[in-house]
Image (cartoon, rainbow, N blue to C red; front, side, top):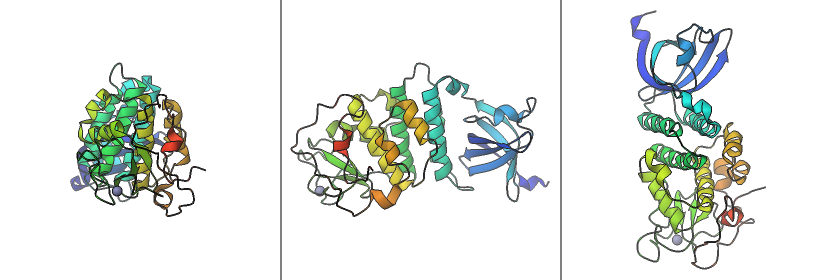
Length: 316
Ligand SMILES: [Zn+2]
């Protein structure tokens, strides 16, 4: 093999599969090379140095041989093994889901520094001693939002996407006391006057402020955000719908994530429905927006009030 076919990069293992007898097929994310799929020869044999290097979520420095169809892992050293994830099922469920999202949204030979940096921080946060499922849920929210931003689909939160209205207080939708719809198809918020017939989730002022915080603050600060269980559940649904619209792919790990974290069931009904339905023009299932400008303070349990929050989506 010529030296020109050898390359080295930092990377995180997104997925590790069995390949033939004793080998592994690994999918990694590198900041400079993007997605790498490589065979790790002998990685399933206990004494191989590749055995530990090719475990899911290992962050390491690797060298590869570039192959015609498939690269192969030559050697490497571990930077962070993230073995702590194995002790926390909820953390593992989030890590697996995020890895699948990154696997799908990254491409070979396309630098992915932003996505890589997000995953480095996300794995550390998931492994943080004392982290609770609620912390994981907030991290998941921030990660999905910041992934959308990195992919060029940042939701716009300052004005109504149709009429440009900035909210009654003049401070933009974040301060307006009424409910606004987070509309995936519009790429941001819609005021009540403009939202009729649109798909999305209705969000109150605290939730819209939380959205902004989750988009703009470092991932490591997501867990510090104060959110009621009802707001957290609504945001998880809103953000999942939003991401699903732009990352239109059936994610295999979603059912495990929903059951492990106790997330709202409508998440599964929406799985992989993507652009066709979220942006549909069928108004027959349209729901009227909530009345009045009062904030809905009565929602205090996870998932409470979610059906009323859904805009024009098919939840059959
Ligand atoms: Zn409007």
